Length: 138
Length: 387
Image 1 (cartoon, each protein chain N blue to C red):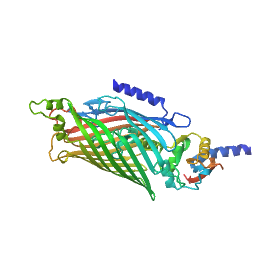
Image 2 (image 1 turned 30 degrees about the vertical axis):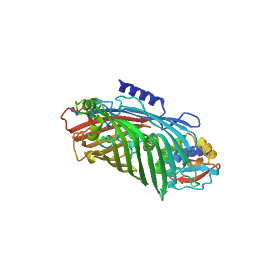
Image 3 (image 1 turned 120 degrees about the vertical axis):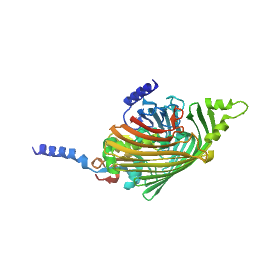
Image 4 (image 1 turned 180 degrees about the vertical axis):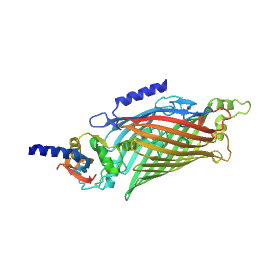
């Protein structure tokens, strides 16, 4: 009975947590970057200035299921305005949007194996293989 | 019929494609296909002249409905060679200077980013003469059905064949950006019935200085266009056939229009924070003829109440010279409209323009002889999409 109650409690938490959980911006352990500022994150993900603190070119990646929440908390814009913003930059040949990744698993894998890749995921999806450079609180 | 075919093709393309910017065609994402388009309908109440979107359009929208003015379809193929190097090829089909929807190559360039602060592009590039100029056919990127005609309608070129280099420099939390470009280009402008100007631009060069701070983006631009203008059509032929005068149409008309050397100065500011979007650009183009000037500008205010963005725009264009004639333009427009983001990558727009024309110049087509302007009401519907 207790187990059932714990299960229900956990499920409820799982349902409610994603709306309030933190989003972690992550890099590979090998990148040598300890942290980035919020301004750096805006510059990189919005394609304004893609320079990592180690001097390398930053390659941002979007986690599609988390995109709406990420841009809401980072720049306070909805996905329609983000798409519209990128339409201008892409079709004028100015810049390319972040690569799109569908699952946290793929994101972890991509970040682990690419020193210049910058991704994001729910804080509780982060494991020891990757390093958190900035946490965004909703 | 052409319009219908275009509409069908674009619907088909949209149905086939997933609604997201840039779709990877290969597993590693090295090849991407993306596109944009507009299905537009425009209704004008002006029975004395035809409404156009820009001076490259051979025919305009007469009284009643027309799909010709704004409907278009564009597609882009991106090939990523490595982290520093990629190739972009983009084509567009819209109603333009050939008098039909024949597709044309918008851009085809190699992009090289040796460092996050430097970017070099070589090939066919968008003419980034002032803010939003090189994205003026991407309806999904702006709130309006079309960019303000008074301002963008007199632009002479869409692309240049050449190179540009962009430098970025962070200044505290702000960003400074310098872009320099040079190249050549060509285009055709419809002046009046029976007279077109073929622009053979052997030199176009200029630069932009951008400053981004918080929600603001300011720009200053300067451009020079040197061209050989070749006038064509019945009017040019008639001038050359005047007995005994031995006239060269290009000389005579060159004196009248003076397009062989144009200098453009622009100032622009964009503001985007939360629900509020403000866009304003002013431009002064100087031509060689009689100290000729084209002054234009617009200001647009939009307020987003997701998923709807109502907006209001005021735009103005005026040409001046020491020798005024009927090629002069003097026009002001109030636009009121709304953008509705109805699905991912898709927006529906409705816009009402109240245009006050004091002198139409070549901003209208097929005008009744003696029409010197007046008030026009233009209502437009647009469906913009990206894929």
